[in-house]
Length: 155
Image (cartoon, rainbow, N blue to C red; front, side):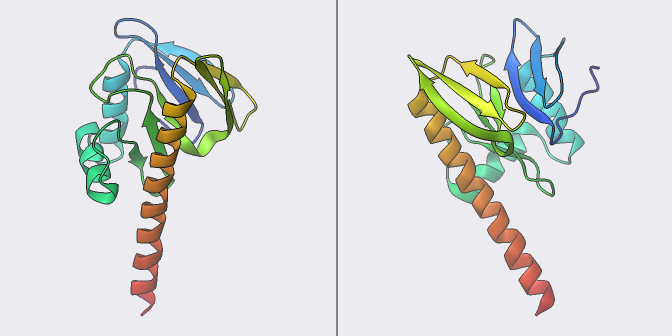
């Protein structure tokens, strides 16, 4: 399973110890013996870039430098955002397109995904809310470019 690639079914990627990552998907969850950052970088490379390249792309598209969301794969709109610094090994990464709701629970945040599974994050509601806003801005910029490109081809 160490040849795992992020797909549309990936809900969240959560560190679960040194060089261990818990993967939540629509229909299952499992643990891999790889750090969260290495797994993200591997998936980004599989789709034609690197984690660093995807971060630079976000900076170029929407100007967000701190805790930037990334486009893992653009044709399927695989957009993930971190719960903390992209340099930190303890940051979780959450799929924007699989979220249906999120709410505050004391100082934590519960995210409900499209399969109605809920995952509690120790990140504050304000940070998650801001990260979803940033990821949505990135998604909007990506869709705008796709529409402009399609329109340009038709002209």
